[in-house]
Amino acid sequence: MTEVVATRDGVVSMLQDRSVEMRLANLRLVEVAGSGHYGPCFSCMEILVSLYYGFLRIRPDEPAWADRDRFVMSKGHACSALYPILADLGYFPQSVLGTFTRLGSLLGDHPDMRKVPGIDFSSGSLGHGLSIGTGMADGTRLRAGDSRVVVLLGDGELNEGQVWEAVAYASHRRLSNLLAIVDVNRVSVDGATKDLLNFEPIERRFAAFGWCAERVDGHSHTDLLAAYRGFDERRAAPDGPPTVLVADTVAGKGIDFIEGMAEWHVGYLGGVDHDRAVASIRRMFAEEGR
Image (cartoon, rainbow, N blue to C red; front, side):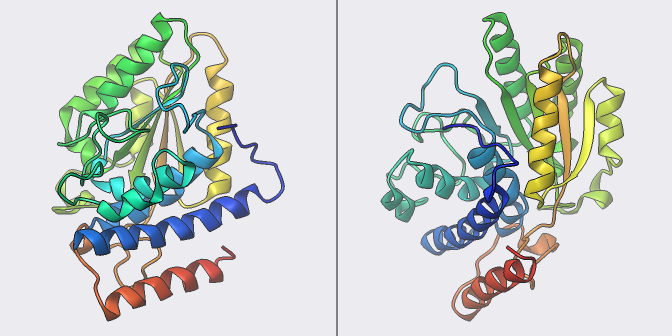
């Protein structure tokens, strides 16, 4: 896939349209499974769309391409936001989406790199992804490769001590090819993150470890693409630091009657509620010029 230049006419509009379509596709996957992670999936949708359609150097027709960028979805429970993107890009047929979580399907409720083309990390219990991504970035440097490594974490995941071990190591190794993105939707399965273990201001904590830390609007493709460009500019400098984007988002973004609610970390919107969700997504993004 050719990297998209943010200044190209219509690119941001295309990404915004994709974000709407992928939300609707996510709803269809939940219909198949009978349950889904609305909150964490919809909070990171713009992040995923901007990465896959506007930044990552990948080849869907050659998933194992050695020089591809690596993406580690540490918050793997939001994989139903990613699967429709992979299908749209051609990693596997669209028909496979209709088997989500069914017996024998490639697509489980966490991604399996042994089964799903385009997946670089098999997630499960949260907290491991940044360590894996750090290892990938270090390995790339040792091979004198040019691949970039992107890791997507949830803010609730920062409660895991292993995350901060990886933060320290990546800084010590000056892994300028490593980009972490923290999806700060402010809720987790146990409630509001500020009430459980408050890490704010997150960007200052990463900066204290020696990372380049930037706070961005996680629902703005313009801001995200600009931040990716900044990461690439720093990556070109010798011995630069790793980068973290602290992305402010809204859990369940697009479904107005569940936005920001920890109760909808996982659940099921069926019947009339499903129709209300579809209408809300279309209306909200139309009103925002999307």
